[in-house]
Image 1 (tube, rainbow, N blue to C red):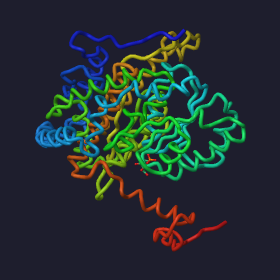
Image 2 (image 1 turned 180 degrees about the vertical axis):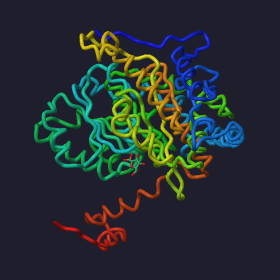
Image 3 (image 1 turned 120 degrees about the vertical axis):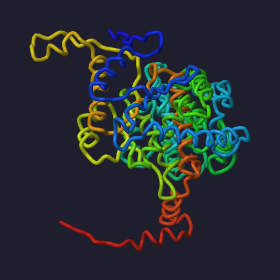
Image 4 (image 1 turned 90 degrees about the horizontal axis):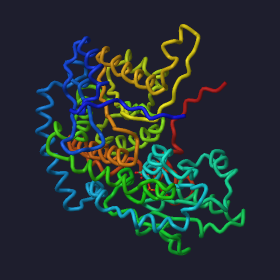
Length: 477
Ligand SMILES: O=P(O)(O)OC[C@H]1O[C@](O)(CO)[C@@H](O)[C@@H]1O
């Protein structure tokens, strides 16, 4: 029954659809020409028109964009130098060329026929993989995927219950190889296999660094393993084995993901007016400086909900330091029109709303109805309703002077997704340069890790003492 629906494109590549909205915007007095489309074909096109000061407040003027573009040119040189030298962090932007899909496919062969894949990992060691398999679910081979990225005992038990362990494979991922949650969950999963009499060493694949407890376990049991590439922080590792092992087990087109990313890499030039990724990073940075301290990532596709979670880690852990950084918020279109939009439209003007919208998508007709008041829905499609709601919500924010940016994908497929992931990583690296922060470290997370280890007898940590010294003011029933 599903039928393909796509917005027709004229030769200039401007969607007829957009033309319509331009008319409505013009009626609302918007100057609408700031669509940044890459010179080379890339996945993501970025429309920053609704972030202009002629439309929104906070907003950025054209002169402001020109000024930032000078900083972008300098930042781009720094990024290119870091990539050329394989420097820590910048090396992540070389992954489309460096990741070997054949190596990944070979490594997953022993488990490729599993019915269920349990991925044990957290943060960057789970979110990239989850984003890819959730976004491309319809294009996979039907392998069920379970991500254990929390240690809530009831939740973990529910996830494991009901699994046919003899048909289940384990994908353990940890860059450091010592993250407590991941190692604890792996020990729990292993025990479940042992209790069921299923040999987990036959059904486990490991992705980790050169050293650490997980590397030791992999070597001791001679488990098939892949390396986390050097110089690539977890949150930037989706386009390596870290994010692609699960995709390969689900028989997704990991080659096309890397090709889409490679095409996006070609769009990195020294100007935001030519590079969608930099246009996004520079605009988000500029708006933060003008008061938009919150960035609500609101994809208009259910399959991109996990992408918003992935983006939240990327943006928060990369830019949140030295009292700087824009707070990412996860939202979903159309669902959060009915929960968050009131705030985004009529609350404080401290937010940028980032929309991600596929131009083409699967569709489903809405049957005709004899209820007159529903005639406007009947005989249409859910896709038309989704598109109308997206445009209406985008325009409603602009009409209220609330800044928003649109990221357009042609459709949600492997190449487009690869480009989107790469583009957002490049946007974040650029924003990090503009903020002047160390984009690739996350020292602030260590305090709680030390405290946890101390509380559990894993060593002497002053942080654990501080936990005990909590100031209390309890209000009890
Ligand atoms: O891959 P690892 O080393 O297990 O770390 C998982 C996640 O934990 C963090 O280090 C934060 O605690 C993230 O940066 C990382 O993605």
